[in-house]
Image (cartoon, rainbow, N blue to C red; front, side, top):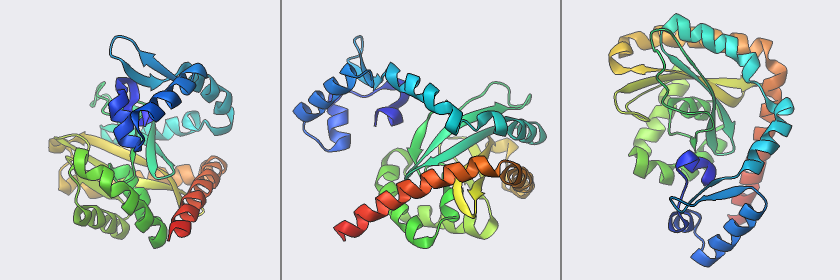
Length: 259
């Protein structure tokens, strides 16, 4: 939850509500996380954010999981050819994490998502594209987990959610307008390894520059670039796929035990 909150952080009451634990328990757990450097309390706001130890651990893990330098040329190529902003997202269990962003000269310095932004699968077009490539059982499980988190902040109904996934499955790309940011459109294609979705590439721009009539051409460019990435960077995506499989297996085991 601290990762989802990002730099804004969360207060004790908010965390207690979100994780479904009483205040004393959350306060005790936060104290332990702070002692280990995994969380930090901002004195001026009395809110909690991620701690410095996570950054240090991330640096140690980076050589095994860092794919951004390999993907960057493809993202830049797509940003310049479309004239818009391009995001690279990876799957993390039932959530999506933004790990890179490229702007074209036309788009300037506009950035809607900062690196590390995390949200439930289905919130944006990139994660809808991933859901469209999942086996139905896994997809339905993710939808059941994500829908309660999408209703409030994103005002997404179950019918809208399922319709977006089905349309992405038919067309091979997801196209959403005004979902993450009012006035913006986003077109995404899933990144796969052996047919399994491990991430996505998304082109985002203002509605007036990305009308419905332009969607097929942007999608064509997206599919072409994503195909190149999947072919030339297969070992990196295979590593991501194994992590997704492990997280998915854990989630399914819990669901089946409860059933």
